[in-house]
Length: 238
Image (cartoon, rainbow, N blue to C red; front, side, top):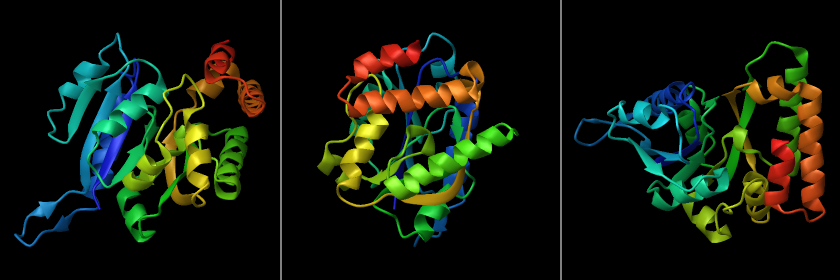
């Protein structure tokens, strides 16, 4: 099965190269030999949907000169960028990866060995040694495994036909991952694969683990009460 990976970016020059390397190296580990005797990669394409970066993000992507990788320009906003990238993707499976995340080396093999689940994500490993981050990982895994509520930094994957059937990502300012999860779990539960996806700890370090976690809970609570993604985006940005 061919996989299209969509990566939304905005000023991610420090992260985009290792992010893309993790995608391509994992896809290479799933190579097979075709009837002609040529090796076949399993990454159909990587679409970097840039929302107007002012740093060297776009230049770094273009400098890779890999035919599987292309950068497109999108209106800003993660929901908008993800939806735009998915519209242009051609793979049978779509995988959405944040630019500050890294896929495990065997990510494609994990999908194959799980018999290509309808949708799901991966366990995480946050790049920080403190025990608080292990608690965050546990909580995020519980949320995905028990409630089928996945966040974007768990590298959501979904069959193209199911993605299109539920209407895909909403072009909203925030909560696009929660909204997609809600639509998908109405069809079937999420599958959580071992991963782990490496996650940059920067947002927790910026605000502090407790403060960031409480803010996330507040936003989810207000969203469940009917707050708009645009209002929640202003709250999140502080």
